[in-house]
Image (cartoon, rainbow, N blue to C red; front, side, top):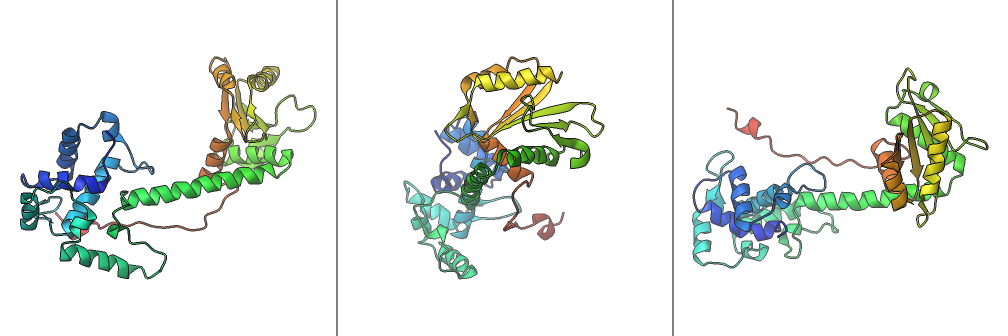
Length: 307
């Protein structure tokens, strides 16, 4: 089964806390075992890759239960069921939802505090909605991925509107930004144009120029993939230059035969499709700029609870 939502995890967390003082690590293991989660589900990460999905959802289930007064925090890093929590379990609820938590004044107060902390009319207070199952981190990651998808599309659209020489120079700029060879003057030189022999650029792999990487850049429409013949021609140009390393970049994609072909070459040839190209440009700040930064802070428990 897939990892349950944080709302679906509230009842298992409360039941586990009814057996004594608990910590997050043992709670995560016990709930994963109880639900029969696979190793893959147990290790699934948030889109950001910074925390396990199951751990994050259990942590938020615990937080909501605590805000409702169903869990107590007897010591740092520990939690246990409260008197109110025991009373709820005695009623044998089939599930615990946000609607369940709204029966408790402390949870309503928590929701009201959140509402007052942001006065914008367009802000939706997620904690009061039954239909939303993702934790705040998941919703942030999902929104970030949506923005990244839009940015990738915008990047490729901009590239498609430029001339071929601009694209060739962009690839050289990107390789230099990725750390190949140092600065533009020492590390990269464009070769593009008529008679280039199937090579658009040469990048020194290191500052001394001991080895070189040959680059081919092709702007194709999104629906037109680069096939094996184009890759074979590029490899032929590498042989002509006595080169052993090459990078073929396209704004579209590569066909299955092309991908299979490069796996068995004596030369090292890297294929970069449109999506990967846009991702690399974003990662290395080529053709993009930061428009907004958001910091997410958490309580420093070491500050409040010094050993």
